[in-house]
Image (cartoon, rainbow, N blue to C red):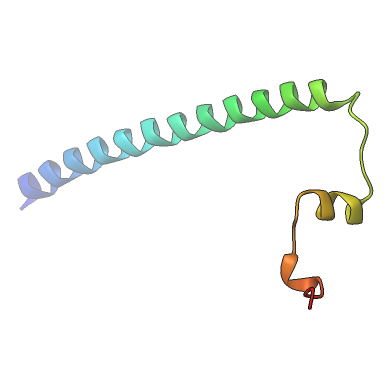
Length: 70
């Protein structure tokens, strides 16, 4: 009985190692994304910002809220 538990415990440890590696990969990917976000934000600091309504219109966002041309 104890031998079976020991075998399963070894498998469990292997699965935990696999999960740990996957979490480390996910964490590294988030770190890379944050780095890219900061780089884009630096480049965009000098870009003029439009008021929300103008940007929605320019990008044709929320067309269902605009009245239809008849």
